[in-house]
Image (cartoon, rainbow, N blue to C red; front, top):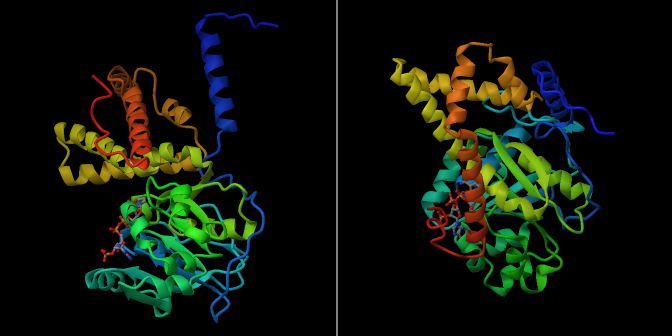
Length: 367
Ligand SMILES: NC(=O)c1ccc[n+]([C@@H]2O[C@H](COP(=O)([O-])OP(=O)(O)OC[C@H]3O[C@@H](n4cnc5c(N)ncnc54)[C@H](OP(=O)(O)O)[C@@H]3O)[C@@H](O)[C@H]2O)c1
């Protein structure tokens, strides 16, 4: 039966509210719902401590951030905890608790090329007790990969082929879990470098972001087919919840995820700058305006991550005839929503083309 449509304002209001309430009740804040639907897969030999050996292949900015999150967490985690409490983020937004994997990484290898890179690792991670269990290797990847139960591939994307070029390196990956954070590199592309180990090495693609440095990463973990074991899935989720939040999505969404979460911090920074520019134009001191804009964004995202629907949040602060609705309409007249959405769509297309090895892909799609 078709519902009669009445264009009276109160009907429109009721309909709008009911749509919003429906959206609010079905919408889950990122991280509120975690799926662990994968099956069992075992890791290879453990180190003497009963824990796992984690080798970071390319331990630069991201590798250090991830290792820092793990080491910080190990320093605060009670061995008998059944639920791991992630490291408190700088912003104080809590990350949902996850089951602790049966075996955690307790021995670490970090691989780099230059001595300066090794010194940086020491400078940034030396304060954690688990630094005692870290060995830093310069220009020597084979031994640490042979020792590893879990390999975190964190070199630049174009270096992947070179790193696995020798047969010994390919063989060293057999039977292991290899987690890649390389932007734009598919699991097929990683596996293509593994030779005869490609079938026995479990390759999982993930996409963290730059906020890992302050434990506020949004990491997308690509789901696997066949699914991962719960143990492996818990371990990967545990690693990335040390540095922020995690969602699991199919590999087909990785380009859009790269655009939203990888490029997202730059888009958000532009909006933050715009808020500051407006405030400064109206006489606010610049330094305070940056703090005010950043804290306002953090507070807003904190509310959304706790389950508040953004549309309802927006309506709640828009008093009829007030300043907020006045400002919002200026943003709508400037097509901010469409423009930002178009930026994410454009970044997705560019990410997909970069993933196919194309260069010079920015430029001529729009007149
Ligand atoms: N940065 C981000 O915000 C971000 C976000 C998501 C994903 N990612 C992905 O994360 C990966 C790492 O990014 P990053 O920003 O951390 O890069 P980075 O700081 O340049 O780190 C790369 C590391 O790899 C090392 N390396 C290079 N060649 C190597 C080799 N042959 N053997 C061993 N180590 C080698 C480098 O050491 P040397 O300096 O000594 O050569 C460096 O420590 C990239 O694939 C990127 O796409 C980055």
